Length: 64
Length: 136
Image (cartoon, rainbow over all chains, first blue to last red; front, top):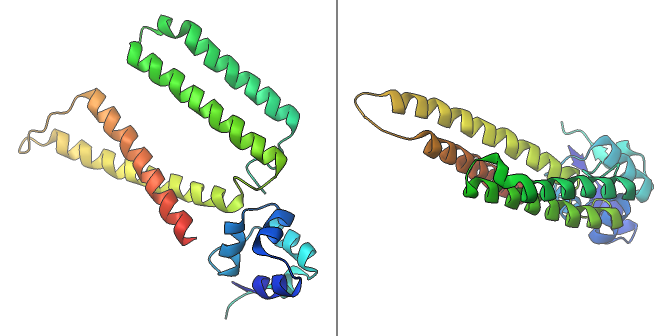
């Protein structure tokens, strides 16, 4: 699964640390999500969507 | 979402009290177990260290949810646990064959077997967790 978390975070002018604090995870988890190495749970994806101001289907995309 | 997701100050205090009681119980009545000084010392140290880790991690988690153990760490830990279990199953199968082999004639006491199992499980879990933490 691909995602636009890095792009949307940059647009929202948030650092990885700030985003991590807002959604209640570690910075390492944000790094892994942005790198495509970790797919977040539905709850975390919804939290990310709320902070980044986008619905989850516009943040996360299925490959292929 | 986190290991301490539903964690409140009341739950934290209650769990600390229970762990403290367990620790005090082993210290006071540990010698009555008749399991040897090393066993009792290991048991009390294990409970004490576990309590300390819980107290510190719980305190940080209360102040900042997700700062210590978040869903990714739990997922890595779950996978490491599954890997360690598989390693132990394979080790048990291998030891079962090797120790019964008349050609090899390997002798191993029950205590050594148990120690080997515990250490192998711990090392397998820790190794898998570290690899997972770097890769995921």
